[in-house]
Length: 321
Image 1 (cartoon, one colour):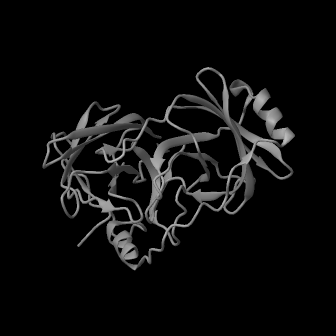
Image 2 (cartoon, helix red, strand yellow; image 1 turned 120 degrees about the vertical axis):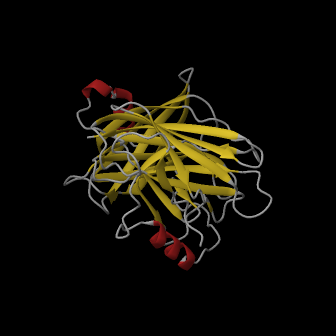
């Protein structure tokens, strides 16, 4: 039975209390069986053109907010997660997810506007935009997303969110360093730490941020979890050298944290082909945090293609509080 790369983690180096990571809770909303069943029921339709194009940055209040922005003077935290991807129709773009704690202003379904300005390493403005968006909520985090038509390079982006009558309420500055994606090359995307991964009820548009075939990955902006949560480590595997069927991958997870390094072997590595994408596969690893001490962690996902022996690894930081 095919599964959405939901894999079991087993301790590879023995330590007291870490003999085995418990199996996923069968009652969990998005466990492997639920995702597989919903995936099989998903009626894939051809990807449509993107519905919402970015407008040029022209609203005076947005322009002023970008020009005056000073991170030290901004009281509200707006977290940004980004990654470089190819759309379902092959175009390169940079996906950005913005998140903030849910409150009376930021709630599910709230209409708002996302705006910003992007400058390259020389300070030259390469993009100014504004676009309408709608807040979605996962747990206690409100989320907004935008797809930026940027080539590979090094940039500084000032991004903002406005509610009501074009009043900017949240701002952040983020460094973007999207790398080139070689067509046909065996590559792995950045490693994302997600609070939720689920099947999408409708087909995505080609450059919908953090949507892969029929899978939605919601990055946790502050990368902070409680010990009762089970976050996902997620990557997109591009062009694995497999003649037919799913690629044959081996994997392990290395964790650096308050209790020292730990290594987990990953069993049942079964990536899922991403519908609508040419030879792209999704791989998600659930990480149960029960028993994790509070503190900062770095997770490294190591992958090896068994046929060729090619190895790739990606890192991501997260915290347990």
